[in-house]
Length: 560
Image (cartoon, rainbow, N blue to C red):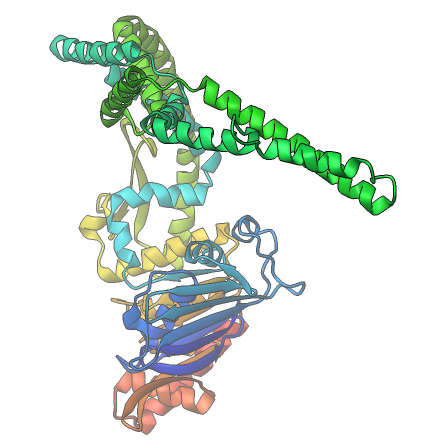
């Protein structure tokens, strides 16, 4: 569960620590006091989308941290991202939002990305906003709700594997099908490119050798002159001896005294090695000079080949190797086009099998969904009765559609608001209050299937009042006995039912607006409930009524 939410420089909240408790926690306050900011802060520390506008005016950064207890170490989000709770099950999530748009996120001190934070946070806390009820109007979401309840992941994954295989075959067939004129144009183009590249007789690595040879030939005279000078210096000529001869003379000079001492012997040895090395160098340079054949005709041929490679690279790739890869691709494509008819026949046979397998997997998925639908209908009907909607009928309708990524089923939720009326799509008949309660029922049922320990309800009481409000309050109290519940509300019935009541209050200090979150005792709860009920004018009668509301809520909670 969520134990402590720490907020710094989020909108009008300069700094706040909210210590939530087990059970039902309610947050109330005047419109605009900052209740939604608390929810925004929760969303931020769970990896939700944020903007720099969320940072308090004048601050360089905002910071939110959330401390959870009782976190299971085997949650997939933790395991996949290398994060582990402490031995006592505590986990600290942190997020810093900079004015420059940068985010720094951590889980138990370990740096993580926003995406990783979102993955982990989604398994710890679920936020149900006041607009979530509108999702019930989107029939495309109904199948997703049913799959979550029925845990049809295995059947859905099997179906999607078959569906992707079928779509892959269809894609291959589409790429092979083209009209005859287009096919002829493409064949001509491919043959021309293949012929041009084959005639070039490209060799991998030749470009580097060619460039080196061209550089040498372009500097032939300079090359020969340098080698001749080095050869003369080492080997000498008719008029003078070279370095090798002089080293031989030095070696002969020391030959007679090399045995007189170890030092002289070492000098002689070094001189001998130096003379041998010089001799090898002289021979190598002489060979290079003899082997080099400078020919203007060869330079022309090399320049011509370099130009040819340049033109080919402009058309087919940045290097000779890329040109060769392109040649291979052209050969493969040409072969595919020329053998397309045979390939299409083979693919058609595979496609028939894939379509059959997809329909079979789709039927298995439909069966699993229909079994889940019966259970979900029963559970929702029970929840609605407890929410003072006993005459409402809820049903899940199945239709058939062409295989798609999510299956072969058209799924939509139907309801009848009054006795004797036919079942109709929720979007056509449900009022705002009915949508809120149906969504609450659905959220409660889905929450039973998940390991999430904390549920947040942000003004889900929109359109609800009177007896219905009391039923919603009782339902949240029931849910809070299994999971921690945090609820932002304007209804006195919901606020009174809470085990812990927080007031979000706005004030002004030194010319700046600020918001603080205060946990209320019984007397302050009475005053807050009286304010919610009667507005700014709080009378003794309202305070007395608030006290009775608290007493009734306490008695109900004790009976759970």
